[in-house]
Image (cartoon, rainbow, N blue to C red; front, top):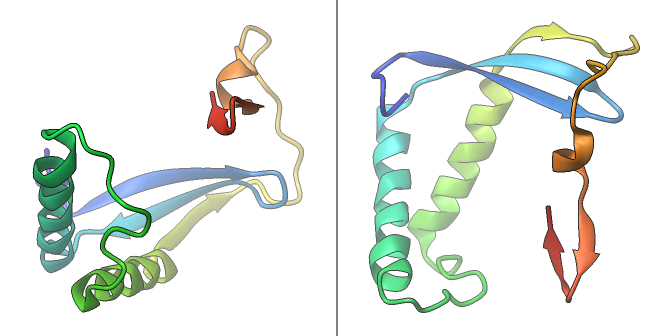
Length: 111
């Protein structure tokens, strides 16, 4: 939405218990501005400096907790467009499913 200026996006979600679901999420400019402010803080304060952020870096900030609750509210308001729940889905015969498999190695998750 930020790159294109569109007012909604389609998001595909796939889970073992709910199948494939297609949602429409509508743009919220105020939310996007707050989100970008936190991305900027993370980038300037940690990425550019090569310093890992502390665990729960922004969690003590009331603005960040508001961002998290806004994220949940936006997710709840997403419009379900289509669902395969209750139906079996197939993979393309040439699909490389390794990208979706996680393996645990050296005390961290890797794809």
